Image (cartoon, rainbow, N blue to C red; front, side, top):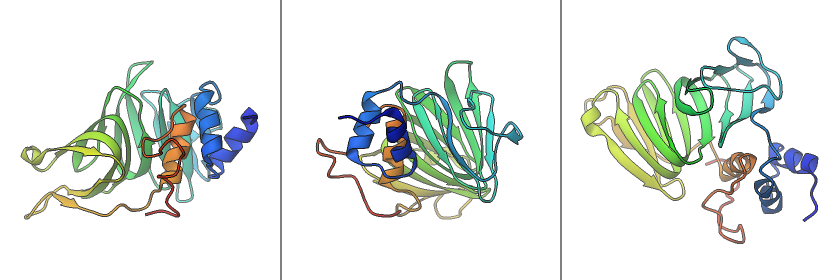
Length: 223
């Protein structure tokens, strides 16, 4: 395989994620440094205009405007933050242990280790997971794309659930208050396998739904 670093990065970030490109980037874990690797429109870090390559660290807040979008790497985790979103990170100087998304949409892939995701209507504990979240003041949409998660509804912690997923098996709506049930099944929506493959490649991995030939995972368009 003879792909230079620039070709690999451009292919991944443009969304043309072939298995060859993904494997090339996954094999060269030095190819992408931590920080902001792609941005469109209005993207701010800690209230100031962001710049490509800027590091995102525990204690930082990343926000996007109406036409904004950001792709960035933090250690062994990678994020795609969609428009009109605000996310804050906690932890020490080296390791992110938690993130808070009160409004907005984020697709994320995580390396090993436990992390805590806080939203308006649920707290989610994740480990080695890929997930997609849309958060509103009164509810969230949560798809466990693969991996494991513990979901605790804010409105009633006794309804907590332990989830596992191989390939978008566990999407739910989680409400802040509902007389019938806080957690309701949902359909996979608004994210796709190409985006997950792109994020995993940025941190030197392939998503678990790809088989050895890369034939099982790609679904055309978003769910």
